[in-house]
Length: 487
Image (cartoon, rainbow, N blue to C red; front, top):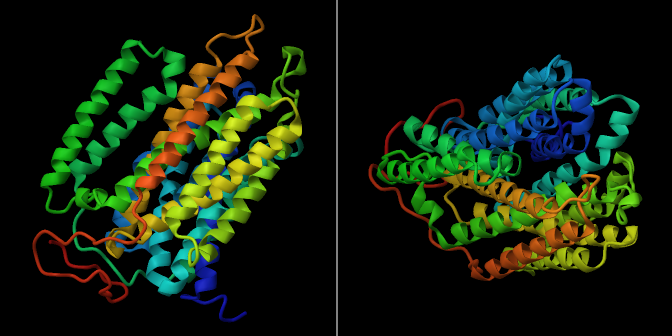
């Protein structure tokens, strides 16, 4: 017991990382089922209330890779505390928000907490023995996956019994305690990557992410051919070209593009883009499908709580697969697990396309999605962690999470367009719309499964530094000091 509660204890470190990552993931999905409740309580419009989700998405997409890189430079445990503190502050602001504007601002602050993902993977790589890194990364990935699913399950009961503001009060308590525990127990980073923040690159990265994700998220509401959507997408193309130019010439790049070109990295990121597109669309629309009233000729007329319970098989599948993934890597490579997870996703989407008339069919498909997500999250994280220099773990895993988020935004937008294309006179989607949406997800899932074949089976060489004195990837830096600037 004494060993558990001391600085440097791997068990305590893991518990802190799991709590932070799990609750951030939960806050991603916890709000989605209760947007109508928030809209009614804060007297706002359906279009405005969706910014509660959009603001969180944009903020997380900006801060995840940037703070992951900062953590690589100044200390991962420091930025972990900052990220958790920001997440707790955002929860407090959201819990007391008197207006929709304050709530949206609170969600922007919460999005800073997205950095807990890459920072957690970097800390695990720094602190755990090599033999335990894969299983620990897989376990954190399982917690992230389960946290996302748990939000859908818990939203209904919490709102029904306590009110929607408790969706923020409860995480506030846990995340606040987790931030204190991270400050007290997580050891200081033994490895710091020399360099400075490339602010021009950070601004350009933030700019093209916002310019891409905003029209993708709002395209259905604004119109895909509207001037704002077309203009923002064109701006994103210009900004990403400028970002690539600045990064390729920088002495201290924010995201090392040579690292991103490693075969294991770019292929895994491609899978993440496609897998995210199918996975997040299922998260968004499967609960919606179950809540369609039976008077529409399909659906189950489920309440928010009942819809969440129908997602329990998905939750169980995520948790089981995620916990087993690390333990299976000695027999089944991360690539094999990623391919298997993608195949589970194809089977689930195909099943929903042809069989969604009974609750057990939806539950079974959800279970398959859960198994696929659990394996995929764990294997993607391990592929990235195992194939990049230790000093770039935060930046690399942060970009992988970002690319998965971009895929999710694109997949959800495409599915929404297909599902709502030809509504009933009542305004509800037709069953044919959902069938076409599930068929679209089947195609995207199949593309993700095929993309896994391009992922290298083993670990490959890592890029060398361009200039300056050699700094070994595993060279420790004395605790409490910063590595010298310059490369």
